[in-house]
Image 1 (cartoon, chains in turn orange, purple):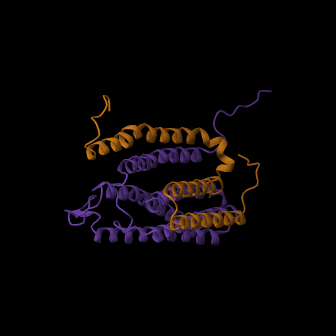
Image 2 (image 1 turned 120 degrees about the vertical axis):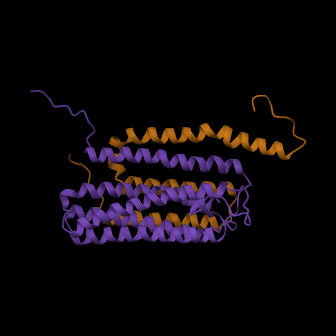
Image 3 (image 1 turned 90 degrees about the horizontal axis):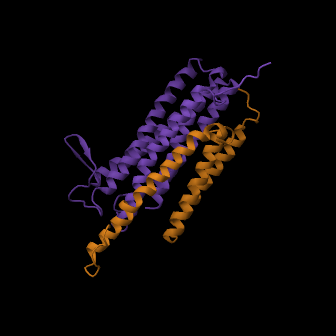
Length: 114
Length: 210
């Protein structure tokens, strides 16, 4: 099959590599900078998403192949998100609530259904 | 005259298969990462600090850079394959493999350190993912279970990648990896980039947002 785009050059690959290195250093510095937890989580995960996007787009050639490959990747990503969000109410929030009630004698009994 | 109609995706069968496999790998790792997110969220403060589990951000950052560089070298090996440059092809494949081995050695040193500090035990020759009784951790066995399952499965994938890169290197050195066979370098490279991608998420989760 013919590819109508120009193939990325070695120079582009090395530029992307440099960007990945810089982004890694940014997340490392964010960790050392003693940011508030929410800010740290946001910065670090945002950097990870950008790095992943660069690796996927250029190294994995997805910038050019995305139209053909998305039908396989998007369902997997949706199911992955569903897995986490489906488990969270019971395994995260209800668990935290149960632990809080167990350690706080002033808290009333759990509501029905909880 | 009848127009021909291509019913399949305009990519090769091999590429389709590799991407399907990577989609299953996304599900596999999201099962593990999702578990980490859910259980870490539930634990709240009942979680060991980095000092308690001897987690070194420097070591994690070094390993991240090792895998990033190895992703670059494997894509340079592909570029050399397309050009027919056998010397660069062999060189970059060998460097990628070597960097994979460096990653695993550093991981091994980390695991050894964790064992010596009592983060997990070995009973009857089998690892038990719970801290030694004289080194209790907040949350008990949750941290070792999550840490070693996540990084252990990732490490096994790295080893699989090293084996495949080794096969490619042998073919390259024996002159059997010409430009007409660049697709196998591309597809094994895809797998290697995916392994790097997973680590790009594991590093901040385990080392930075600890």
